[in-house]
Image (cartoon, rainbow, N blue to C red; front, side, top):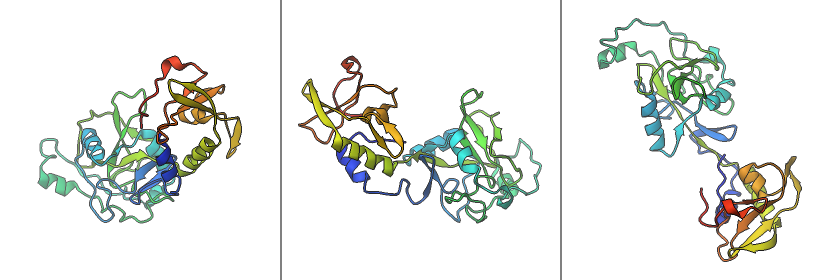
Length: 268
């Protein structure tokens, strides 16, 4: 989840209910492409893609490859029997498999979204079939990327993984989809409400510090904005706010220890 530390943007974003763009769906605080790249219904998914290809393609669109955990969370809501994962496996020769004619012969995929029931309740398609998808590996694996999901000739459970390949590996069934951080509109509104309740306490290097009393928000115990921003242990919390720069919310000061924080341009 990304929280933007700029007051005007917090207020602007708090008016929106949707966390994800129309071509993406919400999955536990992140947005995931509804279809395998190029993320277009009715279009053949990209194949012969390496993990490096996927990262570059997603980054060019302000996104990234999904992590293994994110992918699994979405996958468990997909019925495997409704997906394109029951085709007959065709033999191939490593000496010719990268030829366009051979790739065309081996292709048994479908246009994205063609299997209308192979979807999650939120509208993410083809996780259990069509093409294998590159993801960022869990810690402890040999390679930083792994392949997830069934493809047209293999049925794989959501927790199944192919982590045996270098990030530059590509084959006729390898593809990917992108993810990105989602803005939690509800949390943004709560932060704005908390900020409005803040009371000025002291001044530090020209910046006023604002403290929020212990309160209960949405069933979650919140001691200050810093608890939301930094997820630090409970205790005394303060946040810096410049009276002369109302558009900026600066980095929090924790337990009145100012040595580790310098007022300045907030990081987004």
